[in-house]
Each structure stands twice: as structure tokens, then as C-alpha cells.
Image 1 (cartoon, rainbow, N blue to C red):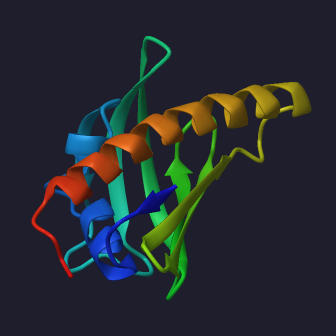
Image 2: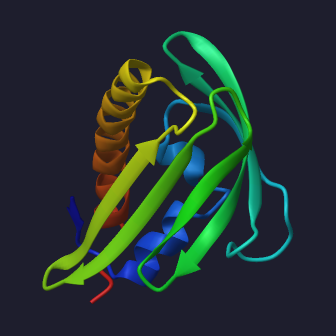
Image 3: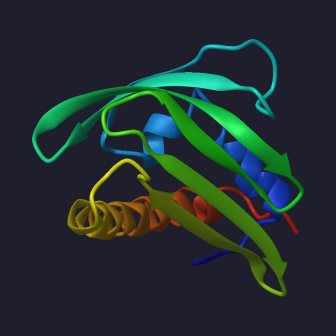
Length: 138
């Protein structure tokens, strides 16, 4: 998905603990556990509604680079990982989000990836709407 904002603007909005629940509608609670701006080692805790159940998790940013970052759950069942990639393009930023759970069986992993991809698509649409509705950046 392409968002008509710079990668820095997208990254700042996505990782803003005060705004994350505006676009991640399944979240019921969210808090950044570590002080300072998000980066390598940042930990966060959340509660999400997933298929009618509340799912508590704690995750840490275990990769951080110019192109994106990767969250890895440290407390969760099932364990999961999520990689965000932000690629500058002519009309903004191409955002790619990949979710996976290495602990699941093959069949369960397929269902997890499919469900996570559908949810990510809805969240990215809302994220794009929120960011592009803001005052123009260029």
C-alpha cells in the first residue's frame, strides 16, 4: 500500500503510542514500556481483540534500520513477529507489513498469516486515511 507521506512521517505516526489505537482498531490497550523515542530495544504491551477473544502481548523491537523495523513478541501465545518496511516512492511511501508465528503448525501458520494479512490491510487503509487527511507535508 502506498501512503502519500514520507517514510519518516509514516514511521513517526505508526510508532506514536498516543495515536496507535486510532488506526489499530482491534487494540483495547496499548502502552510503550520503555522510555524515550521508539527504536531498537523498545518494548510495548497491548491487549487486542482477536476473533472475539482478548489477547495480551508484550513485544520488543528487535530490528531497526532505515527501511523499517521488526517487532517480536516476548510474552504471548502464540509467539509472533511483525516486520514493517517503508520504501520511498515517487508519490509517498510504500508500506509492507508481514506477520508470522514460527511456533504454529503448518496449517495453523497459514491461517494465522491469512488472518493477520487481512487485518493488516484494514489497518493500513485506516492508517493511510488518517495520514493523508492531515495537512499536506509537501
